[in-house]
Image (cartoon, rainbow, N blue to C red; front, side, top):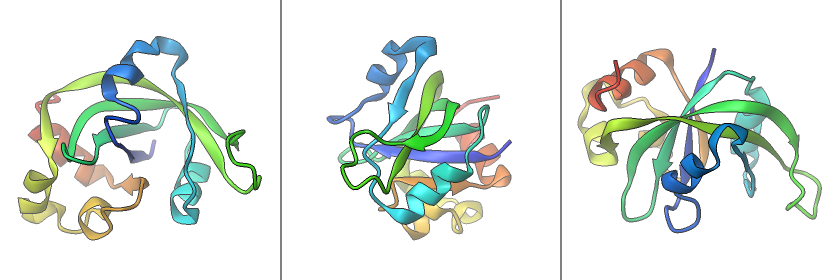
Length: 138
């Protein structure tokens, strides 16, 4: 199982909105960056991802599961980009801020630290474990 990070502005798509979709989840659409799209192409059902609020919040607030693999994104008129479907799995008991992630010596190689603008990005198993521990996930 691979692990990922999905970024969204809370005003555009919030963690509360994601949770309200329940088991049917929601398409992660609107990605128009080739690097992020390649990450989504690599995703498999059952992969987990951090749900990250960008903008003013800048923090990991929850965990999602990939429930639908890469397929064409109907919102992309060019036909070049796709989407995956994700469902909410759980809240982080304590959200983990970008500042905390950047302050952790063990997370300095995390894509979020090196390329914070990338909307969908891989997270290594070691990074996943550290951020989960920081957020109170056992």
